[in-house]
Amino acid sequence: MRCIIYVFSGTGNTMLVAEEYAASLGPETHIAAIDSSFMDLPSPNGYQLVGIGYPVHAFNAPEIVERFARELKPSVHQNLFIFHTGGEGLHFNDTSSVRIRRILRKDFTILSERHYVMPYNMIFRHSDAMVKHMVTYMRKLVPLHVSSILAKRTEGMRLMPFSRIVSSVLRIEWLYAKLQGPTMRAGDSCTGCGLCARRCPMGNITVVNGRPVFGRNCSLCVRCSFSCPVDAISIGLLNGWRVSGPYEVDRVMADQTIPDTIPIEKLPRLYRKYYREADAMLGKRS
Image 1 (cartoon, rainbow, N blue to C red):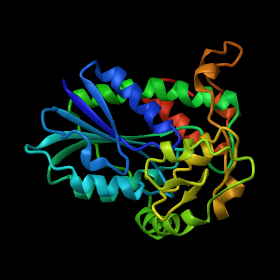
Image 2 (cartoon, rainbow, N blue to C red):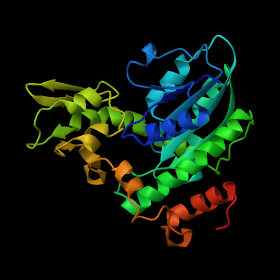
Image 3 (cartoon, helix red, strand yellow):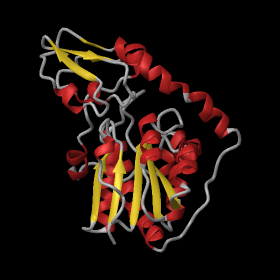
Image 4 (cartoon, helix red, strand yellow):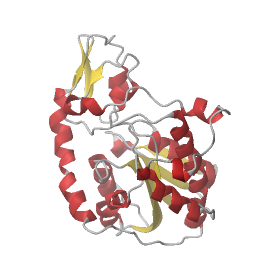
């Protein structure tokens, strides 16, 4: 089956999940990164299956993902699946796709969606043990979802009470991102390497006289600050929540001294329900 997965990924978590989908779906699966030039992305025509993946921002999809969904017009009705990532397993995250589903349902049969807990790139930094736990579970859960997708099973959404109201209120982040973009700064340690400008998926950063200048097209993906090799970028009012430097996932997953998973009762309470549900899906007893 030929499949194309469209992915918006800020710091790499969602792209890592997309790569797991591609590995499970087979060699005829292609990944296309959603960025500011998304009008140039491959058409879904010619594919039998379409996927859309994104990180959840304040219980919403990033604005660029919604804009992309409005432009995604296949010539024939197709099957589509959705996945998203976030730093916690709250069911509020499922509300992030409501508007996207409404946009896409005219042209696609939306089979199902999944949320994957992945390491935070804001608020606080996870330990290596927690990173390995999250990625291990993700790699087990993706093939399970793929089996459901290939069987063309459709699944409804489970929305918590008032989740749509909360999501609607927090959509103010879209406006805040545009306002806070120009408040971002590179400190004295900046070397002018231009990596932030080259990697910004929104095309929001230019280099002027060897220094990055931030515009109003920010999506708060924090890729610039997260991947800055000298930790030079301040992200405005949210700088106190900034996590600096990428997680070394390959090293962590290869480290045999780190257990693959953490017993559920030893996890922070925020994660226990999500992983109990994951174990139930995997046919385990927690």
